[in-house]
Length: 278
Image: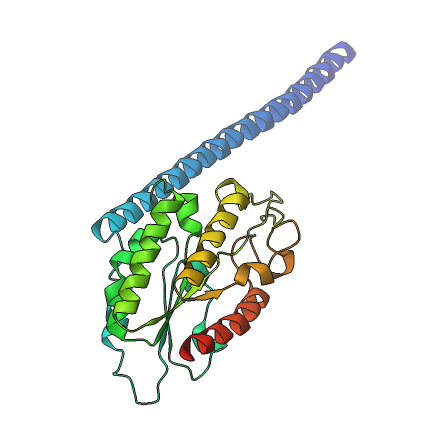
C-alpha cells in the first residue's frame, strides 16, 4: 500500500512538472507566434508605406507633367482680382516656397494691395511661363522677385547660373515693357545647424552651396545697378559672419520663421517705396 502510494505521488509530481513544462513551452510558442505576426504586420505596414510614397510621387509627377508651370494654381484667384482703384498701389510677389509658404501678405501688410504669387518648389523657367497670367495681367505697379534657390538645388533639372540669369532677364524685360517697376531680391543664405525631430542635422548646403548663393547674389546686385533696378538685400541683414543664415530666424535652415519674415517685411516695404519714387 505504501509502495503504491509512493508510486502515485511520484507519478503525480512528474505530471505536475510535465504540466508546468508544457505551459512554459506553450507560452514560448505563443510569444514566438505573436512575434512573427507582429514582425509580419510591421513588414506589411512598411511595404504599404513604401507603396503609398511611390503612389504619392506618381500623382505629384503626373500633376507636374500635366501643368508643369502650375499655371492653374492661381487661375481662379486671378479671375477674382478687381480692376485697380485710382489710388491703389498694387504689388505682386513672385517666388518659390519662401514667398508661398510663410509670406502671409495680408498679415504682414494689412490693407495693402499685395498679391502673393509664389509657388513652393518652383524654378525660374516655371515662373517665366506663368509670368503673364500671374503678374502682367494683374497690372501691378511693382513686382518683387525672390527666386533662385530651387534653380541651384536642381528641382526641375540641373541648371547653371547663366540659365537662371537668362530667365530673370526675360522676367525683367517683360515687366518693364508693361510699365512695372522691378525689385530684385537677393537669395537668402542657408545653414546646416537645424536638426529634425530625430536629432539629425538638416544639411541644406549639400543642395544649395554657399558659394553658388553668393555668386547668384553678386550677379543680381550688378544687374540691378546696371539696369537702374532696385536691389533688395535680404542676405546681408539675415546672415552670420560665416555666410550662414542666422539660427533664430529660420525653422529649417532654409525657410524664414516669423522673426525672419519680420526682418524681410521692413526691408521689402522700404524697397517698394524706393521703386515707386523712381
